[in-house]
Every structure is written in C-alpha cells, then in structure tokens.
Length: 369
Image (tube, rainbow, N blue to C red):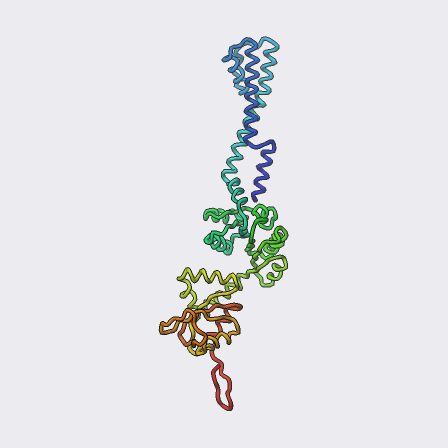
C-alpha cells in the first residue's frame, strides 16, 4: 500500500482531529462531568469524599449502591445526569485511548513520519522504479557514490531487504502518478524505470514526462523494438540489458587486458567513469603478432581506425613505457596500448586483433596491409 493510502486511512480515523486532541477533549469532558456532579452532591450537603466516591462509582458503572439515600427529586436528577454524561464521557475517552494507541503504533512501526520528512528533503535525486537485479545494482552504485535516491517498489519482501541496507524506499506501484508524486518527482533530477515489463516502463515514462518535463528519464527495454516506443514516450536514454550483456562479453573477449590494467587502479577507474559521461571509453589492448595494425606507427594506426580511437599510452614488451607516445612510435607485437575509444568499442578493438589482409602487387606478388 502506498504512503498516501496509509495516510488516507489514518486521516479517516482522525477526521475529528488528531488522536492527541481527541484524547484531551474526552479527558476534559470526563473531568467536567466529575467537577459538576461532585459540586451538585456537595450542594446537597454531602461531604467531598462521599460526593467524589458517588460520582466515581456512577461514571464507571460499578454499582456499589448509593452512599446516601437519593430521596429528593434533585438528587435523582443529578444521579441520572451523571450516569448519562459520565458513561458517554468514558466511552469517548476509551475510544480516544484506543485511537491514539493504534495511530501512533502504526506510525512508529511503518516509520511514516520519518519517511515523509526524508522524502520532503530530497531534491535533485534519482527515482528508481523497480527493485529487481538491475534496480539492486543501480541502488548499490548510487549509494556508493553518495547520490540521493528513492526506490519505488510494491513487493514488500524486496523492500524489507532494501530497507535493511539503509535505502530510502516507498511502497507502491510506480505506474500510479500519485506514488510518483509522493516520491518527489517534481524535485527529482533523474527517473530510472528498470522494471522487467516493457509496457509498464512505457507507461511510467509517459507519466513521468508529463509530470516533470525537465526530468532525465532512463528506461529499460527487454525487446529491441521497445526502444523507439520508450523514446517516443519521452525517455532520454534506453538501456537494453541483453544488448549490453552481449557487448560486455565481446569486450571481455577483445580486451582481456583491460581489467588487469585498470581494475587495480582506483584513479584509472575514476577516469574511465568520467570519460563515459562524454561517450568515451578507456580500453587496453595487447598488440598481437601479425595483427592488422601491428608494425604501424601510432599515427598510421589512428588513421586506419578512421577516428574510432586514439592512443594515450604505450608499454613496450621490453618494459619501456611511453605515457604520451609520439605519433612516430611503432606499435609492435606484444606491446600494450591504452586507447580512448568512441563509437563502437567492440569494432575499434577488432582492428588490432584482425589479421592483415594481403593485396596483390603487380603480377604475382602480394603485400600485407
């Protein structure tokens, strides 16, 4: 159930005021009955102790009997009035006590007030719709970068796991505009809808774009044909996990040295993340024997790639290192080159691993190019 739904129920329970206000009002009413009834018995000549005792057993309906005979019309009227208003007051007071107890127990157990305050403080945050494998990994990355975010998920089991990790979560269906409003979509910077359901992602994208035209929307698509629909619905970027997974496997095949070279360097990993924001990637390639670019100068290799990459570092097989290699340096077999790539990373790396092609030169001669 969404936060708004819970709040609506609590509001319905407290339509006459807050639980504390109702409790105070009921207590004041009972006290007023006590004072007026006791004063009435005192006016009839009873002692304060007898009058207070008579009012108490009357209001609480104990039925011990009269302290003194009710032998006048005034005493009977006073006793009847005390019974009526006293019982009403005690019923209202008991109800207010139950109401206050249940209200604050619900608020305490669900952390509604604390959650509302945390959500109200969010600004420039990310809304993650869906807490599957991608949602979990995304939340982990954002938490590691100390970037504010809120998770919208209707599965209470998944939410319990996320809350145990300290993530801010909202229970509800992300296709409901009311839930997105509660998540602070008007103040959010990014919405990532990563549900495994393409139709739901399209619907969420449409709603989010309508609610916040300036919002950056990143949507997940399972089927490639959904990409155009998500873009048309208002998504700024579409992520196809199957496509990314296949590309990642291809990178592992074509760039086996990248993880070894960059993986142990936090500085290089940070540079890699920064370049990715500009559509660039750092990859490391070990130059093979007889590769298409083996034996060429750096300038020739970059020219052959047609702008797909440029070399920023060169490690010779003999241990010599060139942090800023000149264009005249020759790329030899066994050398390690660090590339900054743009466009298709897989295609760029394939240039190094591709075999040299032979072309006919003159009548009967071949040359490798």
